Image 1 (cartoon, helix red, strand yellow):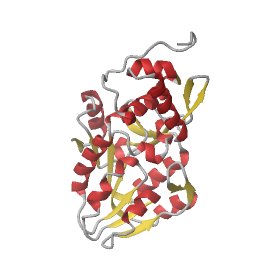
Image 2 (tube, one colour):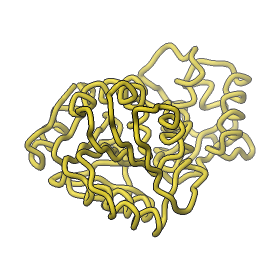
Image 3 (cartoon, helix red, strand yellow):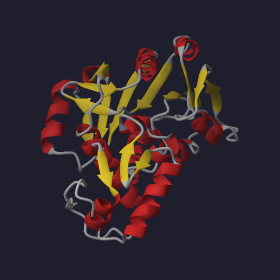
Length: 268
C-alpha cells in the first residue's frame, strides 16, 4: 500500500460479497472522508484489489467518482446530487417500508404531487392500484411509470430538464406548480438538521417550497441516513409538514427531535 494512502478503515459489516453494498459503502465513505485509496477499500471490505478496482470502475462509469493514481474522489459534493438511478437503489428496504405506510394516507380521487425524491419511487406501484388519482410531478421517471395507467390523470411539470435528476426544474416548472391545489404531497430531502430539511441545490429548494405551498396535506419521508447528512441550504421547517414518516433505524434522539416540530410523527 502506498505510504501516502490513508489507514485501513473498519466498517461494521463483515460480509461484503454483494457489489451494490460495497459501492454504497465506498460512496458514503467518500462523502465523509473526501478520498479513498483502492488498497484501503480492499483492506476495509476484505476483498481483492482487483475487486476494489472493478467497483471503482463501475462508480467512475456512473459519474460518481474520479480516479487518479489509485485514489478515488467523489464528483458530486453531496449524496443529494448523485444520479437518480443510483439514489433510487440506496436504502431501498427502508424506502419501501416508508412507502407502504405513507400510501395508507391516499384515497381514491386524490390529487397528489410527487417530486423527484427517490424515496417516492416505491410509492409508484402502490398508487397504480388506487382508482381515479391525479398525479402531478416534475419527475420524468415518475411520469413514465404512470403514463400507461389509464385510471390515473397525469400532469408533468415542464421546465429545464436536469439529466442527473431525470426531472424538470427552473422558473417555469416552479411557477406551474402554483397553478395547482393538491390534496396531498410526498417528498424527502437531502438532509435533516434541527428543525428543518436541507438541500444543496437552490432550484430544488424552490421546487419543494412551491409543492408545499400547493398542498393541503404535506408528507415527509425520511430514511435514517438523512439525519447524518449535511446540506447547506434550508428548504423548509419541519413544522410545515402534516405528517412525518421515519423508520425504526432512526435513533430515539432523532425521532424525539422530529416530534418537537411535528405533531404527527410515525415510526414504521
